[in-house]
Each structure stands twice: as C-alpha cells, then as structure tokens.
Image (cartoon, rainbow, N blue to C red; front, side):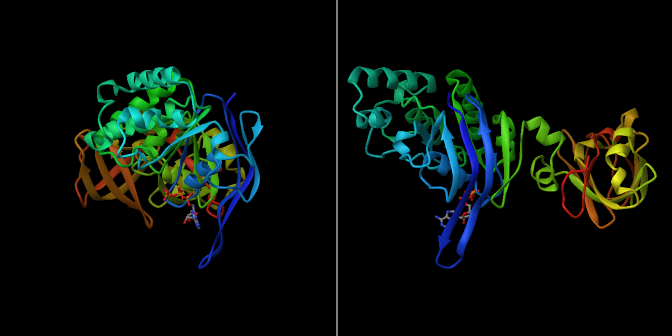
Length: 367
Ligand code: ATP
C-alpha cells in the first residue's frame, strides 16, 4: 500500500534576511494507493517544498509524514522507496541512455540480469529502445524527459514524485507528454504526486488536485468538483481560463442584484443565502455561462443583463466579449457568430443554475 499521508505538516525556512519564513502551514492530506494527485498553485505557494518533504530532501519543522504504513519523519530519502523526476531531468551528460537508466540500480548492487531486464522493459514502455547507445545531448527535449521518467520506472518505487517535469518543453510536446504520462500512470498503476503551476496540466492529469496558495491548502478535490464548486475565490479564480468573473452584488427578497440587473435565485440558492438577506456578496460566473442573448438557452432567459461591449476578441471557435458590471470587467465566452461591437449596448444572459456566491469578507464559498 503506497499511501502518502501528511499530518499537520509545517515547514519553516530560516533566512538571514527574511528571518523565519513559513513555506507550508498546517498541511493535511491522504494520497491513496495508486492515485494520481497534482499539487498546483502560483509560484512560491509551497508545492515544491511539499514534494521535497515527501522525498525526504527537505525536513519538516513539525508534523508527521507516512509513506505506505511507515512513519518516515527520520528516514533517509534513499530508504523511502520513492523516485523523483526533476524539472531539469538531471541526466548524466557523459553517460549513454542505457547507462543513465541503469545507474541507480547498479548503485543498489542489483544483479546484472535484473538490471538488463528492467532497462529493457522501461525503454520499451517509453519508446527509447533505439536510443540506448546515444548520449543525452543527442536526444530531443521530449526524449530526454522520457529518459528521466525511465530512470524512475526502473527503480520500481512505491511512489513517483514529479516536479514540473514538462515545463522545459514547447507547448505541443507538453501536450503529447501529458497524454503519455496519463497512459503511463494507468499502465504502472503507481501512486504519483505531481507538481505544476499550470492549471490545465493539473486538470488533465490529476484524479484529485491539491490547490495551494501562500503555504496553505485551499481545496483538495477532483477536477470537476474544483471547477464546479470551488471552495473560495482564490480557487475559483485560479482554476479555469479565462478566469471566473466576480461581480459585486446584493441579496434581497430572493433576488441577487448587480449593477444593471436583478436575477431571481433558485430555491437552493435562496436557502443557502438566508443569512445574507440585505447584505453584500460576490457573485461568481464562469465566462462560458454567459451568453449573447441570441444564443442563450431557454434556462438562461430569466437572467438578463444589459451592458456596453468594451472589447471583442475573436478566437475562431468562440468569441470573448468584455463588458463592465459596476467597477469590474466581465468576460463572456460566447458563440462565434454572436454579434457584438465595441460600444454597442447588448443583452447578455447568465446560466442561472451555475451561479457561485462568495462572502466578500472571508472570500469563502457560500453556496
Ligand atoms: P515555484 O512554482 O516557483 O517552484 P513553489 O510553489 O514550488 O514555487 P516552493 O519552492 O515550495 O514554492 O517555495 C515556497 C516558499 O518557500 C517560497 O516563498 C520560497 O521563496 C521559500 N523557500 C523555498 N526554499 C527555501 C529555502 N531553502 N530557504 C528559504 N526560503 C525558501
């Protein structure tokens, strides 16, 4: 059983200039056996530090870490039965691919035939069989990345740790490698913990995603759950592109009022927003849940708002139309044939079943 458990993990760095800095605060999670979990968040949020603590490359200030059934707090990285793939691949440039793949096993003094078998298996899985005699500089970025993964596979670890492994590849190759990694996970049936700052990578790879900000876990959920029910405004704004729109709103007698419009709330929303009667809230709506009225589904007809078009971006398959509600700019991702001209007053319709409500003070989701 290769579960990874964090219990009340805290990590402080002591820096001469900054003093004591808390990089990870009160981190708790259970990554299940064979699960693919992605840590995502902006630069500096503590995701690499969390990964390095699992690996044992960084020691937590307090709290407990379990891998499988073992408490690994004091355990050396090499005894944790993990393999880590780094962003820069960390291949040995003077060694051939075969030597790079077998190096770790030779160090562990494994029998020769076992090493040969594992290198053969890994290179066949990763399509590296014809390149075993080459040196890393003779490979493309994507091939080097596969060697780095291969080096982890031959060790047959309980847990794979990936630290932004695709960030040095161009956009097209990144998509290709993303698909390969997802397939590899199915094939190996291994526990994978994967760090990225790219929310698209997180959404496509992760069975569950841990969203972090400023050293704190914001939400742990499946991609669908994160997208549809973000637990606060940070998650709502971080996951999804273009980002969720936020509007200043007010709740009154079963309606939500924003500048220029008033929408009747669904029964569920009325119940959830009871404590906010007469108060300010933040209304969150995803760009794809706003329509130009000519393409609005019937369900959206009761949620109309008149606004002046500020910017139109034609992306081919869709148009992005920007307008203002109060002080805030709102983006609608509309049908490509929606007519919208800059300066024109236009009716937009919102999908009333897909409204999100947040508390303006705590920024937490209300309903
Ligand atoms: P990135 O995507 O930029 O790699 P990250 O989310 O992985 O960011 P971490 O590398 O975990 O972030 O760093 C978290 C915080 O801890 C950052 O503010 C960073 O500056 C700080 N930090 C990391 N390592 C050290 C260190 N050795 N000494 C002092 N501060 C550190």
